[in-house]
Image (tube, rainbow, N blue to C red; front, side):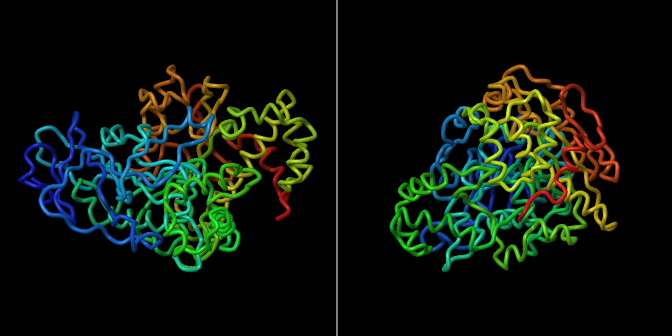
Length: 501
């Protein structure tokens, strides 16, 4: 029996962490431990403050249900019908979950030193949680990985910018969770020296910041960025959202004043201010900010200059990311040629760039062409640039790129933002996954994509050629997975010097 396993936990798998004993659940060789606190509840004096380590507890703590989610509001229609976002009430929202292989006949996790993957969810920094069924870690544990999923503070409580409180509190939460993993994951059979962080959308943006943060150095060995590029805003820019919410509430834009506001009233004001934000034309939204502490400089600049050069990277996008943002609400159909040109001008997209996209997509509507430009501007081009910088340096660890292209039949979403998640987690049977995918999904594609993520976490190699001058991209659908060199290269090249920042 492992020294970490509690002998006095007879009714389920038991683990001894630094804070105390846990009792989880066991199902078909996979043990799950849910709702484990990694930091104290961010309430009272700890609200709008950096996370404090969780306190120890006496006896055995039950870990069979997801812990509280961070304060948030559901997605607005029509996204609420596509993106599940469960809410679990309670103050202890700084919690995480662990799924671990638990071989039959063993009193513990069996062989030590398994690879560890830590999932950081997306949701525009205002939605999401680790309890979304799509993110169930059973398949990863089934395949020999210890899977950890994390909750962190969202919205104004996680990413507000105040003169009297630390910035990037949600990012600090993630670092606290990774610190917990380093100190405790061996109890679950995981190797703290083989940690891979992976995330999608805002989760991937967060990982971009973690890669650049001196406070996260050494907490992970590999990273996966799904549909999110390293980016940040200046404190002055990021503070605009805080100030707009303060104006709506008619209170000073300070943490002291916000801490006195009823949480439901605060969430209502937050939703009113940020509800019209756009991944293309911005508007009020929450951002990771350069604060001189967690993030000394813009993560894109830091990574281009060699930050985390020793960390192996797997990065990629979905072919039709924009369709989740533009299609369900009908925006793509409402954009005509004139509106397209006005929006491109407002976004400071060079005429030459737009001309290349129009020429290459003669059958597509103006709104669809605009969406393709948005996808590349926000996601594909920045990740390609990061991969190029790493190769050009000659000293970076391996970098791999992928593209997910299987087209969902649901609402003509095609290969939209977030569609790959059920394939990565191999949770295609979950009803919540099928909100985006529909019921008839290619199981072989999920098997291949999930296996690539497992292989990357295990060995640092997902199974295809690393990035080089020929620009190899592993495409997952449509059809069989295939390695393609320099896909849509003419469009990518059209971005050279195209944005007048």
